[in-house]
Figure 1: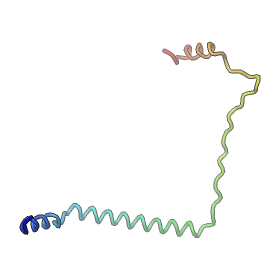
Figure 2 (figure 1 turned 45 degrees about the vertical axis):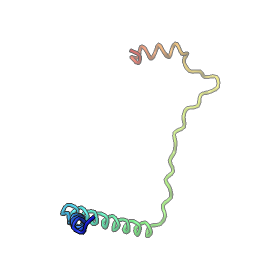
Figure 3 (figure 1 turned 30 degrees about the vertical axis):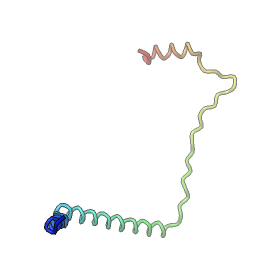
Length: 87
């Protein structure tokens, strides 16, 4: 590579792209805002007393009694067909 080629390549590489400059400034502004909001959130959480985790009550599934059986397969299939399930 000659000096002339290298100079041309360097000039092309170092050429300022106005769109890139705008993207970089917008990215920096968003990143700074996120950092500020994170710092505020962490400060707020540090000043509050710790919260107890909310307990989630699960609905229990109905347990079948040992003597209780579901409908017979033929009855179930007939109800599905009459209900429009199998067309």
